[in-house]
Length: 278
Ligand SMILES: [Zn+2]
Image (spheres, rainbow, N blue to C red):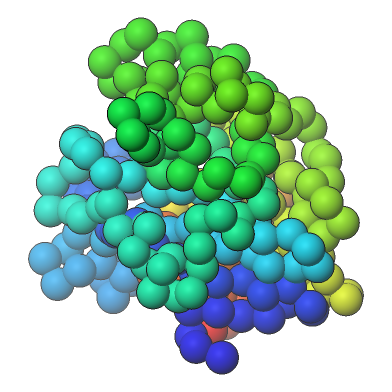
């Protein structure tokens, strides 16, 4: 099996990527003193930046082919030293066709998670995954569709609201199963409706974090909340609970923003919890 794919019970999880984005640690985590990064220098680039993958995951299990998050997509985005718009070609290179996808699950409505929902086809906005049912957290829908008139959130009108008009969208509230093997786990804080995804099959489990964490350091420092969190305190609490749960359940920890391909296990070294890449 190539390193971009893993098995969890009978489910196969394939890591795909739309590109990567760069941040200065002090911009991304303004409340964290630069000295606190010293033990984790190897997690930064040689120039001292956080290099975040913009990752999505395809999950094949039984008759479901789910895609979790859809990247930044093509067009303009406000990131320096970054690259995006690669999801379609990366999926193609890994043998996944857009029309195979039965289910698209969006962890939250930030722009780096919804960018390939819709594309222009013959001049008309069209779902890029034409056979998929899309699932979006209702609490995010409520907040972000209200902001869609603001320039910063103009992507919502392009990538999110048309799905509702087309009848392709379902809003998710609370913990709920999506098919037999996938469960939406509310982990609000980063956004009001932020949702992680539990994959269970044949006694094994994996959790796709979404943005419950952005960098592996947060497996230990679950109190590190980024500037982008709308409710840092709630984010902190849910991140801590989620990592505790994953550690207890020996779940595979799957992250779209951790280093590619984003699969890892939680291990303890001298009492400290680390995320260790597979
Ligand atoms: Zn993100």
